[in-house]
Figure (cartoon, helix red, strand yellow):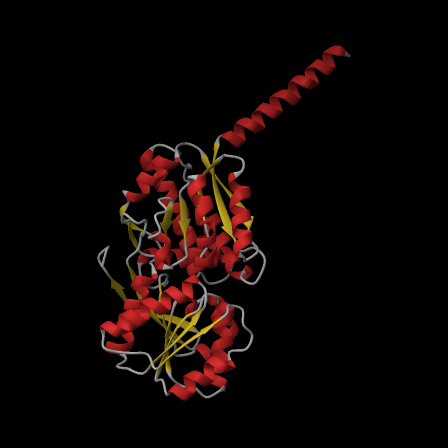
Length: 378
């Protein structure tokens, strides 16, 4: 009997050691995602893209001989939730790196905690200030709004030949930053907006904003709206109230969520887009894989997360290390990597991409028009 008990204890002990060794042999990447709350659908895309990259990397042998493990924490689509999610992910001290969200205001809220944590974080928020606030741990897997404003202004003024601009923006860090950069970009082209309208995210009635645009006589509307659901509400009310101005907006205008909710109200609109399936062979191949796996179209929410995982894996392999400082240095050294969002060349601030695509919604299909790129620092 004693021998049986001893044997059983040995088996249990060996199993526990085996499980611990297996856990220790994975490289953990923490992701803060919007699994619940107002932006939960965007969070689904983000998680899908990241998981697909992890699966592909692990199937190819992993990183430094180990498998990647993605740990997802829900931020409930809020700033406080984001800070809490970050704290939960980093409390165990076993994360190699982090992936944030596309919400600039959430990244801004997490930034002080991230500095204390000392882990590299890939982000999708596009507010220019996020990578210019002396936080050395932030790396952006999308272009910033300093570039987006230049592309929107250049296309609207020089290609569409329109001069009476209305700017609509959400009054968060993303919308306020985009509005400021676009106003400056238009000023450089000799244009002053006829009206600038801000609104609180998740507003259900945009009538006052739309009426102000209609009364201004604007012939072009440009938007920096953070949430795809807000884009859809604005689009429907804009058309219902008879505003037929052209529209060139930020990437949320061409997300799958916005287009499904707004349908015809977004037909013939233009947007800048960091991800467009026909913009490169890499983007086309990703779009095909994503559709096959998830049975839905890919968009920017999934694309940047896919690239974020790939970039972190590349940095670890290049550094031959999972130490935060080594990963940080290796990310800065990445030049010419062709991701699905574009070709990455990280500058000293942590910005990896330096241009945007112009796309058009043609009867519910996104059509790539052209890519406009800038040299880092322009």
